[in-house]
Amino acid sequence: MLFLKNLIACGLTTFRKYAKVLGHVKSKPIRAKAKEGFKASYVFEWLHIDITNVETVKDGIQKVAFVKDNFSSGLLHYKSTSKKAGSQFIKELLQETFEKYNLYNQIKDIHILSDGGSENKGEVLSWVKHINAPPIVKKITAMTDEFPFSNAISEITHSIYKSEFMGGKHSEDQASHLKSLDAFMEYYNHHRYPCRLYGRTPMEIINGENIDKTMFSEILKNAKVNRLEVNRNFNQCIVKIGCNRS
Image (cartoon, rainbow, N blue to C red):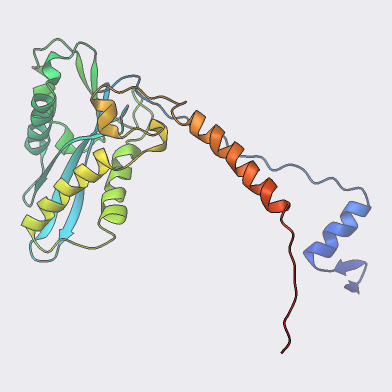
């Protein structure tokens, strides 16, 4: 500690000790308010869509778009091209998704969420406008007055594909790239367990299974009892320390 012209130079730990002795009460930090999010209340209520660039070794950049269901976190469909990914590309992807899951005959409303890129306008808006089906289909743009939330759920999907699934590596060519997308769909929908689904896979929810928050309650309860019993038995062990001399 150094005294200089009525000033004390000391380490942070020393300062805190003196401050405590003098009665200083440390104020609690003000935590930033968690950002409000949203969650769908049924399957196919909110469909997220976005394009990402995926690099291949021999065939250059491939444009990939996934359609993701908000409620189940499941990937419904994907489309990839090495050409321009405009509104016609997105429209075809959505058409294929609606046909694959028979969405034209859904009763409840369907919302399609995307960013404000030109690929999500034009042909896409024209297609949505002329849909003649039971559900009311709405095209929504993220980060607007109508919908102030982001489309982060799509960006998270891109990150999972590139980092978690591909491990930062690139497919050799377009053919292997498409195979990797098929494998990713299988992995993501059938072998990955999002925390929000409490032990279910996305495809199980899409196929009608319910989200059961108590699914593992009994297992966890029994595990706790067993763990306490193991610890109790361990504490009763007699530990002997010795050595043999020859």
